[in-house]
Length: 308
Image 1 (cartoon, rainbow, N blue to C red):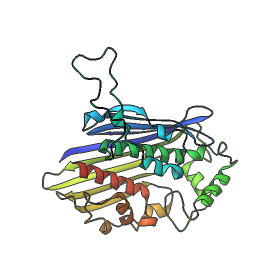
Image 2: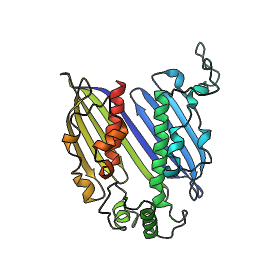
Image 3: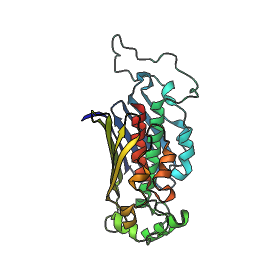
Image 4: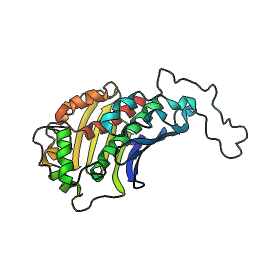
């Protein structure tokens, strides 16, 4: 067995001052290293700074660092910003490399033919940057549970009632029906006894793809954040078709999450990882009663396998 691809996403949300938070997301993978960062106000979630970086990529000319001006002044609340990130222009075409002090003999520190307008076709590197910005938004969303006073609510119970009113019938682990009692989430997450002040949210997602040497390949993905830990393992053939599949919910909020009886292996076996889109993976993994963390793990594995 030989590892042929691996990578890890991470997202951390910190309060950096009385008025602002920062949400940073990173991807360090076999052929890519990049990041996205949002600074936002704790009361309005207004974005005050948005930065991106590509340090390693299959196409070196995509490397660079810069500011995503389009996001500044917008909301860091993911319900407001999902569409904006989807159309975020590819700034990597329009920035030069960062040359070291004094330059470096024989190595160009300028990109050839910088484009004033981003091309219509988005590079695979920028697709990853967009997803990293989505990660920063998801993290900010999670961090809100520790900013309730700044967001205009006095107690955790008020915040939970607000959240349920905002999304009726929708609970934190994305399981519709049988909504847990409002007080269960603060108790599970620990913020009843330990209300975070500086370190608001932490997450990582790791994947690895291995060649078994017999025409079959093995892939595993692990997701862990401040409230969950879950894993997916699968085996697929040279065409990308899943032959075997298993998932494990190690640390989850509610019994309904742990059961995940609607995510049976038979629904996944036979899926072609090179042909299926993320939205279709969501339909297979339970649809509106599924778990979007499981969807994220499997979708990231599918993206990597499609790139091999």
